[in-house]
Image (cartoon, rainbow, N blue to C red):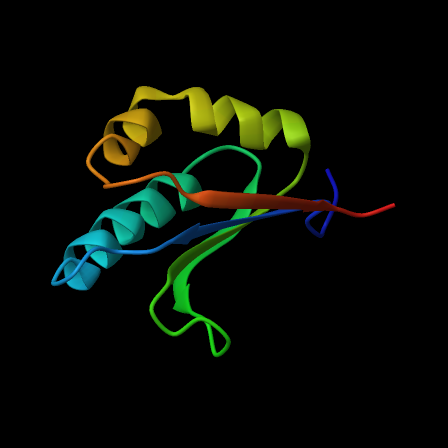
Length: 95
C-alpha cells in the first residue's frame, strides 16, 4: 500500500441562502464516511479564501478505484441527495 495519496478529490458546493450550516453538516458526515472507507487517507470540510461562500469537501485516496468505490456506496449517495444543486468536482492525480 502507498504511504501517501495518489488521488485528491475536491468537491465544491454553493449553499443557498441560509443553508451553509446545513450543507457543511452533510459534508462533515460525508467526510466521516470517507475516512472510514478503505483506501481513504483523510477527508475534511473546508472554506475557500477565493470563494468564501463555498463549502468544500477535500478527500485524499490511495487510488481512483478506492475513490470510485466509495462514491458509489449508499452512505455517500444518500448524503449527496440531501444537497441542493450540483457540486463542482475536480480530481487530481499524481503522475
